[in-house]
Image 1 (cartoon, rainbow, N blue to C red):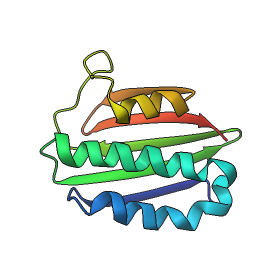
Image 2 (cartoon, rainbow, N blue to C red):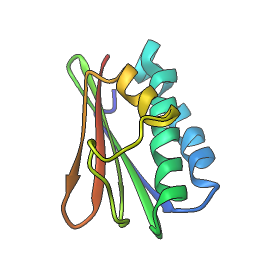
Image 3 (cartoon, one colour):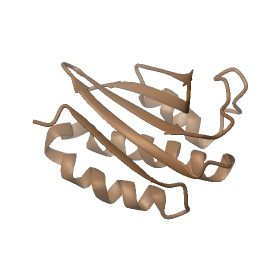
Image 4 (cartoon, helix red, strand yellow):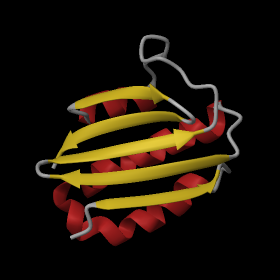
Length: 116
């Protein structure tokens, strides 16, 4: 079983589709949470592409015990959870997540943890 997977792509409108195709390789490892992970990754990557000026977007999945951690990073301006309007994308993330948040460092990262 893979425990960590990372992918980086240009931040284009094709990025969500390309990442969904790459995630297909993890279907067995993610089991019944596969569709949830694909939805979260698609939504967060689309947000990065549409709402930031990022040139690159990366996704990391970490499988740890009973938790799947999704991290989507870009070099955009970022946001805080309090600032975000609860529209479809973030509402889906909040509904599926056990926990979620943002980290600011060299890159801006939105992370989500869901039960496995």
